[in-house]
Structures are given as C-alpha cells and as structure tokens.
Image (cartoon, rainbow, N blue to C red; front, side, top):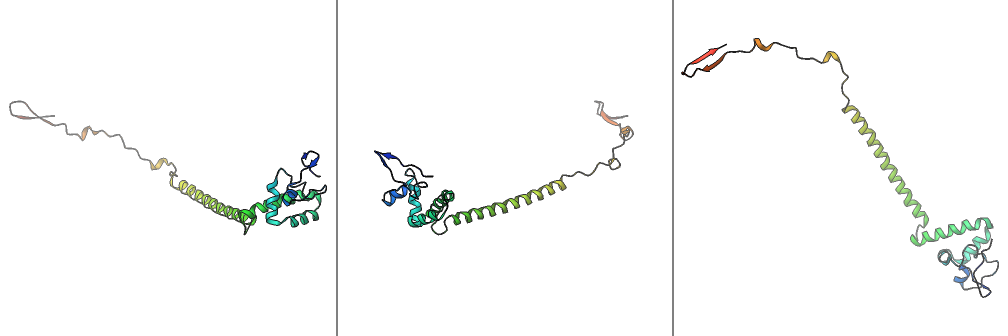
Amino acid sequence: MRQKGHRHGGAVSPCAGCKLLRRKCVKDCVFAPYFPAKEPYKFAIVHKIFGARNVNKMLQVLSENHRSDAVNSLVYEANARVQDPVYGYVGTISSLHRQLETLQTQLAFAQAELVHLKTLHHVDTRWPPYMASSITFPTIKDFSSDVNMTFMYDNGAGESLWSC
C-alpha cells in the first residue's frame, strides 16, 4: 500500500526519506509508505540513529504487513536513543520497573501497617462482655439515723442553746 505524494504541477513530491537524502523518490520507494513528506522528523531521527541503508535493508527483509510495526518500533527506539544514548528504551523500561518495585514495596508496607493498626484497634477498643453479676448498685439506706440533728444557735442574750 503506497501513499501518494503531493502533486505540484504534475510532479510528485518526494517522501521524507528521499527528501532528506536528496534523491528522486521512485514509484516503488520503500520509505514512501512509512515516512510521508508531512512527517519529516520521523525519518530524520531514524536516519540519525540507524542510518538510511540499514533501515532500507530491514524494511526490504520484512513482509509488507510487518513493515508498519517495524517503522513504529524504529521511531520509538530512535527517540529513546536520543534521550538516553546509552540504554535507549531499555533504560526507560528499567526505570519504570524500579519504580514499580518501589511502589509495590510501599504498598506492601502500607497494607501490613493497616492490618497491624486494625489488630491494635480491635484489641484496645474491645469492651469486656456485660455480666449482670459483676455490676453492683448501692443499696438504698435511711441516712436519717446517722445524722446528728442537734443544732446550736444563739438566742440573742449571749446564751447558746441546743435543740433537737
């Protein structure tokens, strides 16, 4: 499946690959379907990392139904290589893997702490079971016999009197 280039006065504009390489884009150009003229950055970055000759060889070896996926992978890897020249996308995957392991460890600690707190909360707030025999109420008592009802008062004449 070949994408058609833009026509300018009867001529077909070259694909991004042929334009960057400054060559004529032929009818059966292997780059044209995957590197359209509208997306020159895709071919530029793939060319910078892998080289046009290597990309051409890879695409010719693959069947046409696998070429699109291969080009997407090459563009992804080339972008990753520009950002991390040593490890490329493997560095990104390793970094994400480390983050995942860290988050899984943090989650395990949080879950263990939650279980521990639930256990403590369950033990500390548990009231002893209600037992009628353990509750004692005060008995009603007649306190009138315990109270001394004797009062001392002054009659105004300087004499203290006792009354009951």
